[in-house]
Length: 274
Image (tube, rainbow, N blue to C red):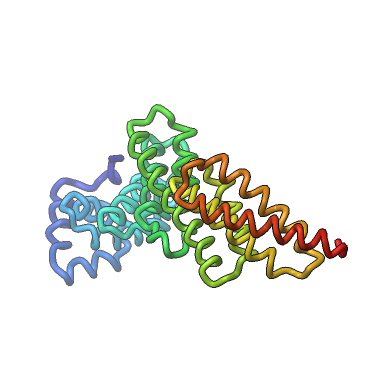
């Protein structure tokens, strides 16, 4: 912690702490222009785990100390107070702000990690919007690139795996949602993107099968001039599926789809239209 303003005695600090313990005393201190006293009281509240009052004082001091002695300390302990009070949204913002303002601080690595961790904590269930999850992933990836030997790396890798799994499940559910409501074109493209994006996904077999089935249902529901191309795509998708999952639980149904697609192609060829 950086030193307080010269001239502030131990007795004065004790008086400030005593004054701040009462409600009226705290309000008077908050409204006063004695910034050294506010700083001392804010640190005392922080040390006593009274983070709500510390937050109010640190926030009050932020503008007054900009570019001055103790500004870095105020920014750091303000973010820490928010974090310890479990206001993760604001804490994350303040840790990110700290990292921008003080790129040479001894707390830089910890600030960047905690900013990412706050985003991780705020990351919602996979069924909700995943903007915050993607933000946390980006921040952790940047952290890992900059501090690959950090003591936080085991945590970072664990959080990244967890959040990537969440995005994987979200994307699969979106694709299956299209299939469920019979939007087969959107389902086909979504499953295709899922397979390309997550080549090692545990539900890859399911995704490939539902892509095959969506493609077939989309093809037979298409205008005649589009059917040939789309049915040929189905047969190609079947070849990839059957070679990837020779013992699949879906293999019989996939084979039936292939057979129907080939029969439909034969009928189109016989019609002489295409």
